[in-house]
Image (cartoon, rainbow, N blue to C red):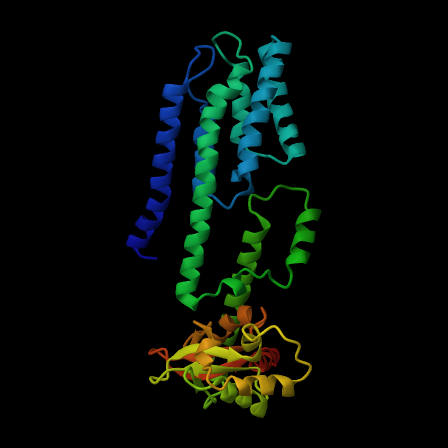
Length: 356
């Protein structure tokens, strides 16, 4: 990663932190109405760190943030009303807050410090107004900022993935083959892991792909693809497209333009999505229906912007797609020209050879 990229990633944290901190400060300054409570709960600074520095942490999600601070505040207010001894108050506040957070599944470490604010207050005894000012004024804008920030990160991650692999969302969103087992293992561990299952599963998948790349070294898509494949253009008729599928027993066929650039994929499924909703009992019926639509072109029914891979990409990068419902992946060169196709059969052969 270059220095520019590091600075750019740092700005993705610094700017949201700056804006959120400013909003919290403004609300705390102008919304603070009583001298019985502090202007700001200091623990909110630690919460900001969790929300923006480690956004994938379960402790930084909306419920742990809100639930953690509010339950802690209630514990602090309740205990400070019941006891006068500072040692007892501190001990019970910390212990009770942690236990309640675990039970309510809203563990948020900075919240423990919130419980100590009423306990250690040098002013008059804080009452339930403490929940509104400053807890609500501090936590609510942070919670909203956190939701917005996580959504932005998700969108940015999706856009980055699409640019590198031409809309790989459906393949990457699919859980790994061992997600259920991963969940079972995490359930049996008597410890708190500061990472959610989806992130851990994504790390697992990426690690698995990288291991395959290392094991098979420089085996790329062009080494396993089928060359000299049959293709049609978007100006060819639907009749010709379905006839080609039937004659060659294909489930899909790539569509190219005059420059041999991949522009779409045409399949029987794509055609059925657009034909009239009428009962067709056989392929012959479908064949006759297509024959009636000879004026229609494949371009009207094909799936545009199909997922494709560059010939120099490692073959392991095909696995998420071919195990997610895709049967054919077009392979292109530097000019986005179609030069081959990788099928599920090619993938099976590749995995079999790895075992040898």
